Length: 240
Ligand code: FPP
Image (cartoon, rainbow, N blue to C red; front, side, top):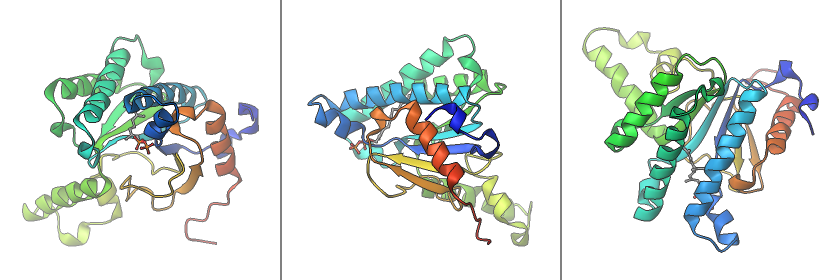
């Protein structure tokens, strides 16, 4: 499988990824789970760089869910640290290779130093024209919808809009992903076959692909294979 097997015309515009299996990867090697996350972060850097190279427009990755706070203090701390480390790495790099970074999730609920870095990187990269990398961090799909309902209700309450004006576009425009196309393809490595509160609204017509390997082992070739599989599927959108 090489890039030549991919039809540029049929390429998905937006790929979402649930980066699963970091801890099992670590367990199989008898190492600390935090090392699994570190390896997972390196995989993310590799895959995002490659996705940008091959001209993908949007990639959304699930890095920390609103449920992940229930993990041990050490593990939560390690995940926060990793995000911080990578944001610093991006901040110090000349051009981020033209990647635009956005954060999806409850950024206000993160510690101030992490929040600052997030605002800086989002601002610094906002005019980049390559891949848009959405990092879902402190993210929950239901939480995102609740927040959208609240924002819209506020406008109804203020007589800014009437209830009849509420439609699907309005809901989409009040989500973290506002202005972006919905994902065409969702990839979940790690062997689990569930959605785990990820992009509940946006995945309505998305093709799903479950890959039986852990995220740290996910390679550029796996990404190409996923795109190839997607291109071979006959997309229907509820029609014929
Ligand atoms: C799921 O695997 C993975 C996570 C909860 C964290 C994903 C985070 C990264 C890949 C690093 C993010 C890095 C940056 C720069 C944002 P798991 O821990 O549930 O593994 P398991 O299913 O084997 O238990």
